Length: 315
Image (cartoon, rainbow, N blue to C red; front, side, top):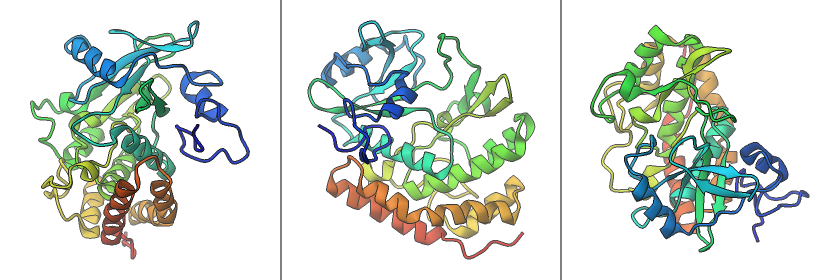
């Protein structure tokens, strides 16, 4: 029995949870009033994912499955094509990645950055897996045009890049240039304070929507890698003002100037984050991470927030 929703991670607050979900959270993610069953254990997910390697378009080293919601049987079903969801189980190598990712995605959403519907699901062995709805798929299975920035910048190394290079591409090809540059700045800021040191080129995409055209996709694959890889030497894998470590408010100001943002836009991004500081700390403290990891996450967040706190950036 869960006392908090496995998606939004908020308590029931007078609303009943069904299979660990608020009704509204379940409908947003699954389209049904309660989440489907998951008929496979963690070890089975990992084994099945290994068999699917080479047949799925989902990149990365973490075991993951492409699944659909079989509404007739009300359970998740593995598919090699046309999946509407990505399922990521626990791993032996990294601790509590599902809980980590769900928390970070909720923080990103709270800050005002668009994310796809997502949540945690208990597997039959009692372990939690992370599930996210694919934003490049429509309900009928058709696919929206999407390309990640490793493809767009035509590089063989997803770690070889910078926020400036992404911005330069957006200036030439986005149909909402000003909005996308603000979005990119906000992601650079938030990813740094969350310790998301693995935000590489494949974690940024351009998505074509019929009503808008080409624009940055919703944020995805957001985790605090500093939490699970404390020995990692770089704070960020994409450089920012030529730096990957010890990011300061001055570096953020330089980045904003390269983007062409106004002081008002930058101050708004920093002020909103500062205003949410206590709320984000409460989200971390109330997450599904165990206490040791919650405390460590708070240390990472608070230290970095102190380094980029806004005292005012002039236009």
